[in-house]
Image 1 (tube, rainbow, N blue to C red):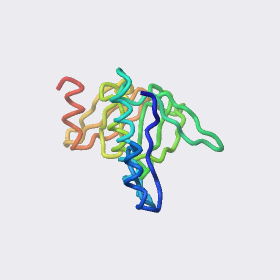
Image 2 (image 1 turned 90 degrees about the vertical axis):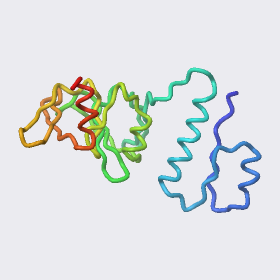
Image 3 (image 1 turned 180 degrees about the vertical axis):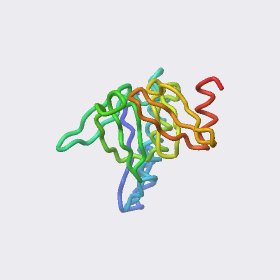
Length: 171
C-alpha cells in the first residue's frame, strides 16, 4: 500500500471525525506547537515504516534549508550535531575547520530518536557525535571527561551521558 500518510493541520476542529474516517495519521489544530507537529510527523513516519517490509527505522538523509534552496544531506556525512534552542546545527564533513554547518528546525531529542545508535552517540544535553569522529576519551583528574575528536577538538561529556560513552569504549 503506497498511500501517503496524511496529517491535517487546520484551525477548525469540526473536520476531525471526517479526517480520521479518511485514515488520517493525525489532526493538528492551529496555532501549531512545534513539539505537537513533531509528534504527528513521528507518528506518520512510524506508520510508513511499519508498511512496505524492510524500510529502515533510522534516518538516511536530512533536507536542510540553505539560502534559497533545500539541500539533501546524507546522514553519513554528519560528524556532529549541536543543539541551539529549537534548532540543531549540523556539522557536515570531517571534524574541524573544514566542516560546513547548517541550521535545521528540529529538537536534538527528536533528532536523536531518529538516528542510528550504532553510528551516533549523545555525549551532552546539547551534543550528538558520529561515533567514528571520536579519537579518544580524556579525564582531567577532577571528574570531568572529554571526547577528543579526529580534528583535534575536545568536547566535554555530560555526567548524564558518561556511562553510555564509557560503555562505547568498553569501560
